[in-house]
Amino acid sequence: MTLPIMPAATEFDYSVEEASSLLARFEQAPNWQERYRQIMLLGKTLPSLADEFRLESAQVKGCESDAWLYHLERDAKHYFLADSDARIVKGLIGLLLSACHGKQSDEILAFDPSAYFKQLGLEGQLSPSRTNGLHALAKAMIDAVKP
Image 1 (tube, one colour):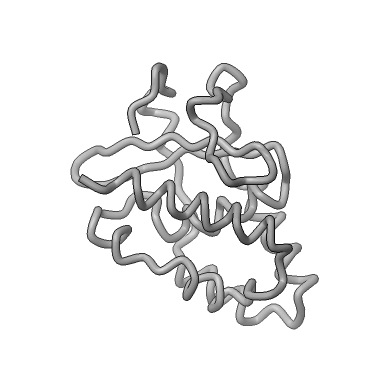
Image 2 (cartoon, helix red, strand yellow):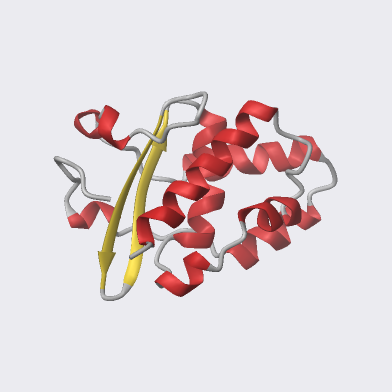
C-alpha cells in the first residue's frame, strides 16, 4: 500500500493486545453487551490518526463509516495504523490489529477473519453493513502484505 503521504515510521510503534488474550477475554464475556463494551474499550487504547492523514487515498472502501488504513513493512513484519470516525469501528479495528499488527506475511496471509470473528462471538451480532465493513478492513490488511 503506497500512498502519497505516510505517517512517520515511529507512529506505527505501539503495542496491541495479543489475539489469544482477546479471545480469552471475549469468551469470558457473559453476553453481547459485555463484548460490545470490550470492543469500545479496545478502540480507546489505539492511537488516533492525525487529521492530515485522514485522506481519501487511505480510506478503506466498503466501510459504512470512514476508516483509514496505513501499512508499514519493517524487518519482515507488518505494522498498521488505522482509525475511524466511529467508536465501534475503531474498536473493531483493534480486534483486527490484535491478529495482524507486528506479524509476518505468512501469519497474516493465513489469517481467517470469518473464523476469528466467530471465535470472538461477533457472528450475527453486528449489522450487515458493519460486518461488510469489518471484512473490508480485514481484506485491506491482508491485501497490503501480498507480494
